[in-house]
Length: 325
Ligand code: 0X9
Ligand code: ZN
Image 1 (cartoon, rainbow, N blue to C red):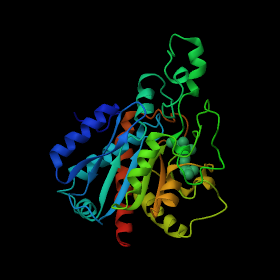
Image 2 (image 1 turned 90 degrees about the vertical axis):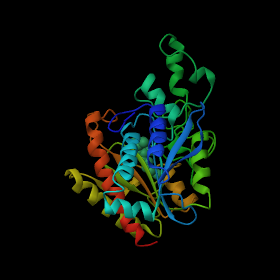
Image 3 (image 1 turned 120 degrees about the vertical axis):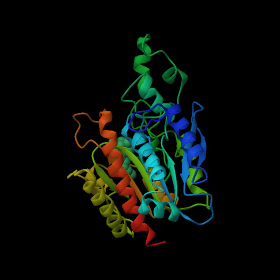
Image 4 (image 1 turned 60 degrees about the vertical axis):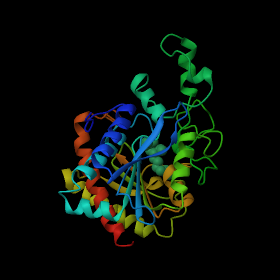
């Protein structure tokens, strides 16, 4: 069914991808990176036609953090827009012809589902001890205490500068638990393996989060060093942020490193994408809203604007990066 502009469940998103591929093949095809801890299929969509080989590629993922529902919804919006406007929009057509777009809407499907069924503000994935993860939160008082001790923060589990921990915890009961080891979590390892495949030529890594309306640049783990191509990162991000702001008239959208705007953290996916996978442009986007009044619980009537502005940003980024390829 048509799930654009809704906060859809994980199986609805997966079904939607199948439906789009049915309609738009061979322009679109399914890819999978593996299954989650609880066995959910981590399904994505490749948009760009059949040609593989060294067409430059753009990766967009979302839903690393369970409660950030606007992120998967925005990814779905982008998928819909890339495919439905391909025929009618020259810029879209040219960017889809130039790049292979790989979009994985839900990196953390177990946590995402848990945030729908049990705890709206859940952040981590759902791996861990049975006593912590599989007890009955609603009817067992002990379980209510143990519940936070389930799961790992996938955005502290990626293996570039995983150690020492920076705003990351070794306590499994904290929401920023970094896991027992870098890539201890199947969902992070699945993304790593897919992005490491040398037959794909990724130029851009974008990961959608919320909230804060910020375009975060690497490095995220420190403010002491900058990547040597930092000026390129800043230029492309600024072009993207300007396109974004122009779309729906948002005036607030910050661009800068995680440490400069927010805080530094070790083990996030953006740093690994750049430092580990060698993808030149690596961005974490903190989507709407800007303030903590609604925070993660953004009304669904804002999906449309979040989607349209982020789509414009992705087109602007692609156009700019295309000049280099
Ligand atoms: O803390 C995070 O993982 C991200 N913010 S969120 O509110 N969505 O949890 C920011 C991560 C930014 N990237 C790095 N610090 N490397
Ligand atoms: Zn997040």
